[in-house]
Length: 251
Image 1 (cartoon, rainbow, N blue to C red):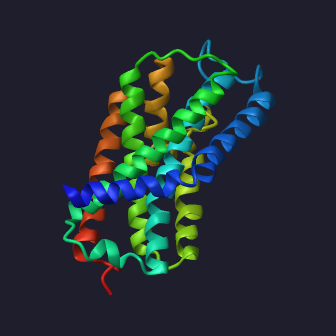
Image 2 (cartoon, rainbow, N blue to C red):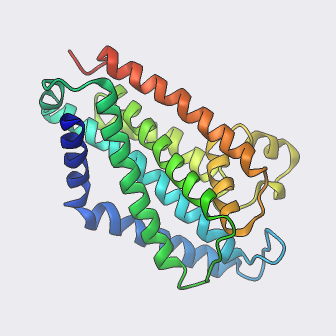
């Protein structure tokens, strides 16, 4: 496990040494979202009975920050290593694809959870939140950050330059995140769009995470958990296959 621990430690240091950019900046961004949307819609929208809009918005912003930063961690690490040429120092040691996968994804989980916790601590000053089911909160936060860390790993392996990585993020990750119910509940949508939202795996991460705070959700939490676990298993298998074959890594 020495190789795994070393690579994991390296990935943690990589984002922590620039924490002003990787941790503080996303917290400020989430705070701006809360200020703008919360001020504009407070008292005008009640998504769940007895839950004001600002309270509804906070878990969505926390989870959105977790997902986006988990993706950014693994994807940016790989693409930077490929472009600068120092990826060879990761490929030369006798690291198995399991160790590489575990180190990159676990470091992404750590960054996602650190940012998410920071967003939560800052935003609860606006509206205090209770936790109806903390186990669901932890489960969906960990699984969601692991999924996005894995997607970042896949994107980093596939991309050869920053433009390709930006396209992956702008045309896949960002739309799926913003259309997952961060700012709204899908039961307020027309029927056709409500059904379309059920095809978005990110929706189940947000909805299950929000259930942990309010005890209500658009979909049963166990259903959301099953979808999230199945999605993680599928993309994890793909990522490990890419690592094992050396796809776009061993030229």
